[in-house]
Image 1 (cartoon, helix red, strand yellow):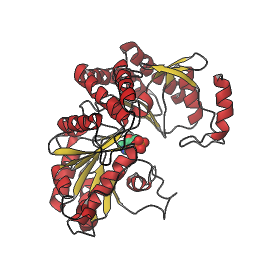
Image 2 (cartoon, rainbow, N blue to C red):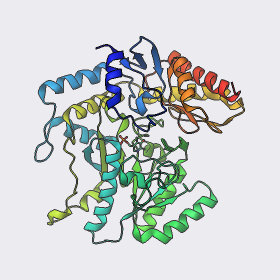
Image 3 (tube, protein in one colour):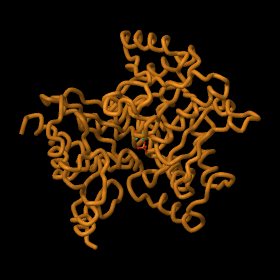
Image 4 (tube, rainbow, N blue to C red):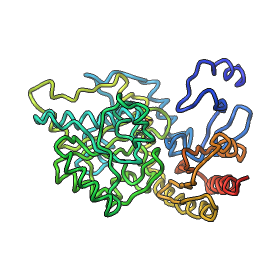
Amino acid sequence: MSAADWLEQGLPHIWLPYTQMQTTPPPLPVASTKGSRITLADGRELIDGIASWWTACHGYNHPHIAQAVRGQLDKMPHVMFGGLAHEPALTLARRLAALLPDPLERVFFCDSGSVAVEVAMKMSVQFWLNQGFTGRTKFLSFRGGYHGDTFACMSVCDPEEGMHSLFAGALAKQIIADLPVDEASEAAFDRLLAAHAEELAAIVVEPLAQGAGGMIFHGAEVLQKLRRAADRHGILLIFDEVFTGFGRTGTMFACESAGVVPDIVALSKALTGGTMGLAATIASRKIFEGFLSDDPLHALMHGPTFMANPLACAAANASLDLFEQEPRLAQAAAISEALKLGLAPCRDFPRVKDVRVLGAIGVVELDRIDDMNGLKRRFVEAGVWVRPFRNIVYLTPALTIGEGELKCLTDAVVAVVGERARGS
Ligand SMILES: *Cc1c(COP(=O)(O)O)cnc(C)c1O
């Protein structure tokens, strides 16, 4: 079947994510990927500026990951994780625990970032239930945050971006605060926390960089403040590092550079180097010990069918090998400098509100984007795969991207944003 055929025959049966299917042009058929390149069915090549939703940190088709998955496929593609164990998962758990700051040491595997956050939330509530606190069932989260698309996750997302009004009545009501970044927001945060402390299971935050909610950055001191506040009120602290994990903000995990240790951390996105779905919720010793008792109902009540899939764990182990063997964090630092230089010209454009860079994340914030489909088309015409959202154009390339390819990306952003800003 040609690409034209499978696209035409399949499209009437596919439902695309976050897509108004009546007005959005059809997706682009892809033939293959390699490194930072996406080859379309018609032969055109796009340089990928966003590493497939921030997952492909080593670029596409890294041979080391491919080889690990192939080897695992021959041995055992999958086996259930209840009552049975396998080397890829136990090795991965040990390695993740070693990479994360002490006392984060217990790894629960699942399939997606949303479910990893759900598990972190469930873990928090059940932790308190197990200690006899029945009233600690709510969460405090932040404006600008994004934690996934399932119902519990939606309830802790930014109220507008998370579509709280759209789903009003179906979502649990949580406490949503502004991140305490200045005196006014700190005072408001302290008041909210004091008013709701007794009913809170945990505070949920994306450390250092809020991703899908708007690519908004904050400093380590904000997280240190959250840690102190959580401790003062005896509330748990959850870091959602689904976006920030694995080098994106410049260190392996954002919690490292922030110098703050959460009680629970959620990882996914780049965990398998962008090859397949896998996620992990990692808890501290204290949280884990809160589930130890003679009572079977005190066990963590969660168990996805495909949890710890051996193929995905083999991919993740191979991805961690690459972080050990290749200079990923140095590459992230070089990307950071290139993004700062390359995107700087956007500062002078009339409709640009802000240009900011953190680690391997480069952001151009506009006052607004009117013709989103047109803007996306312009980027494809410019030979790059960049997916602006809301009023944000951003780059989160593979950490392995070549210098020349990165320059093509920043040049394309400057050119396309420039022509928009001038109203052409
Ligand atoms: C993408 C993302 C999620 C959701 O992950 P899925 O794999 O899409 O379910 C949760 N939290 C953050 C910070 C994310 O960036």
